[in-house]
Image 1 (spheres, helix red, strand yellow):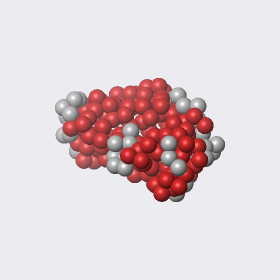
Image 2 (cartoon, helix red, strand yellow):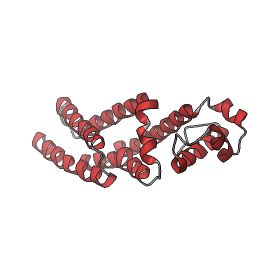
Image 3 (cartoon, helix red, strand yellow):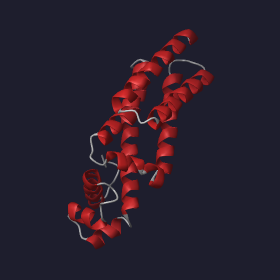
Length: 189
């Protein structure tokens, strides 16, 4: 997950912190817990990260970067448009949501995004929207229709997430929206 982090010590710290946050939650985890789990001293930990918020933000940033690299292969593929939209959605939304559902403290960890990493998530969501537009434009639709459909998909994702849907409900809901997209693309052809 931390392939964009070049410093091996930081990778070890982020990996350990992710595991500790998942097991004990963000609030109950101390910097000492993270240092012990990473096999580094507290001073060495503080040389890399000033606090838990910095560590959390680095984890989120690295995760978002890795997802964006994954979806680039999908965007460039010759798969049908609806399949590419679905695959990107699964990588960007369903899989992370499922991972958080399966962690004892996943809900707390994802809830922190509004407190500590909101700018990272906003940037990620803007890039997700841009990818939706790029995929839709590859269907030779007008820029206006591509933007309208991407806006609809992005707003649907936000609404489904805000309603606290499970990962399987998110997947099913997005598939329903993709059926609407498929009809719109057929009519515009």
